[in-house]
Image 1 (cartoon, rainbow over the protein chains, first blue to last red):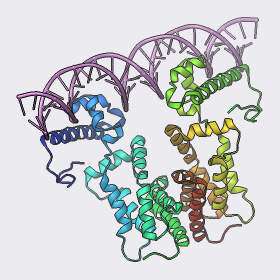
Image 2 (image 1 turned 180 degrees about the vertical axis):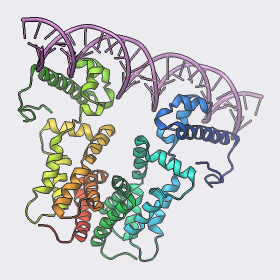
Image 3 (image 1 turned 135 degrees about the horizontal axis):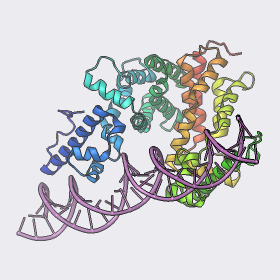
Image 4 (image 1 turned 90 degrees about the vertical axis):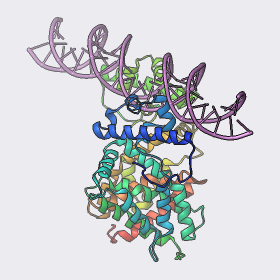
Amino acid sequence: MTDTETGTAPAPMGRRERKKAATRQAIADAALRLFLERGYDEVGIREIADAADVSTTTLFKHFPVKEALVLDEDAEHEARLLAAVRERSQGQSIPAALREHALRYRMAAADGDARFTAFFDLVNGTPALRDYAQAMWLRHTGALAQAIAEESGLPEADPACTALAHFALEAPRAARSHENPREAVIRAFDLLEDGWQALTPATES
Amino acid sequence: MTDTETGTAPAPMGRRERKKAATRQAIADAALRLFLERGYDEVGIREIADAADVSTTTLFKHFPVKEALVLDEDAEHEARLLAAVRERSQGQSIPAALREHALRYRMAAADGDARFTAFFDLVNGTPALRDYAQAMWLRHTGALAQAIAEESGLPEADPACTALAHFALEAPRAARSHENPREAVIRAFDLLEDGWQALTPATES
DNA sequence: CTCCGAAAGTGCAACGGTTGAACTAAATGA
DNA sequence: TCATTTAGTTCAACCGTTGCACTTTCGGAG
């Protein structure tokens, strides 16, 4: 959340952009603090704007919708997703790499620090945020499908690539209803793994 | 849409329930007419209520949200879905049966009558309605997973059943981005077909 | 038959997210 | 230095949705 040295902007920004970024950060901070304190649905937009000392109009100039106050569109997420496929270890299949990624980045790890866990719980405990997050992941379907096509040697337009991409991104959601989501995700990827193997003509490098 | 002899209520209703049903129908008719004329987003709730000569409060007593004015929760949809699995032809695999169902009931057929096509286009051309419809389908995941478990002999709690159910229901959406969605759906189910075959221990009847 | 309670419907006011319009103020760059 | 951007403001509204208090009307039990 606190973007301390996230390396997002090593480019020297002018006073203007710095102020803009500061305002944005102030809004996001205020929002997250209030949400964690009282719950997403119990905090209104106007209240957040007040806490950050801006007008609601300004708030919406920085974040298109309320959910975005919590879930920032992050280019890193997509980068990591594609990297998981492209830079997978030797001999690892594409579905296996995607499973690893899903387990690492989308299933709550009981160990992480408290701040992160609280954030995770906030998202997972609020339907609006859950849905928004899932929709964000799905927006990477096209890019992921393309990466899969390149890595597998299948024609880029092969719908099988899109299908694998979409299913892989949906797997965590499908697993959500089970007692043990991690196990369920693993099993879901078993399905994809076997199906993919049958579909792909042993072209993998 | 017009439930002329849909067989939904052969039970003799009292005057009261008949009036209620009539009001509901009047609202739905007015809404659909206006939506088709001017587009979903261009018609407000208050206007629909006026057209049906009821108050907005009454409208919301019949339909929980705006989208429901177009997409009625229909028990038949789930029944057909489960029947597709349970009453599939001899030797047909479960994924194959699901593919058939998806192609038949979820991909626009260019031939059908104009009224139906217009309705289909309205839904598919309005993001809010598309999403709502997809969410409705996904609500059948649990029931479908159970049916799959029964038919396949896998333990009912096996996440693979949920995974197959979820993926099958998501397939049409995954195919949406392609030029030829039908072909894309077919290919998506190839993936599931092969994966399922590998997972299932030849227990099928 | 009558009367009571349930349920349909009404009217109105409000809330919360979101948008538009008209405007101010500050930073930028020529 | 001046003109152009553009972040930010203020205010008012829209839209979906909900709550409240109230009326009407049907249905059933005494």
